[in-house]
Image 1 (cartoon, rainbow, N blue to C red):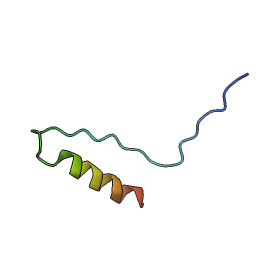
Image 2 (image 1 turned 90 degrees about the vertical axis):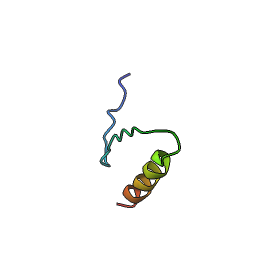
Image 3 (image 1 turned 135 degrees about the vertical axis):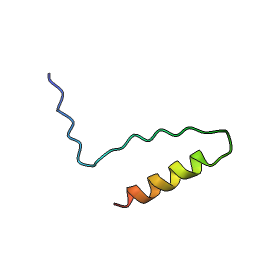
Image 4 (image 1 turned 60 degrees about the vertical axis):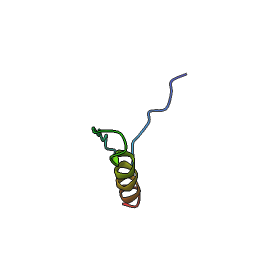
Amino acid sequence: MAKKKFERTKPHVNVGTIGHIDHGKTTLTAAITRVLSTV
């Protein structure tokens, strides 16, 4: 039995961040995710 093909209905983005520990990478990523999730 063949699996149903997954159809992506929302755009997606891969974000890579570099930097030293405790310089706000997680905070920045969370803010970007929050803003883009409402689009």
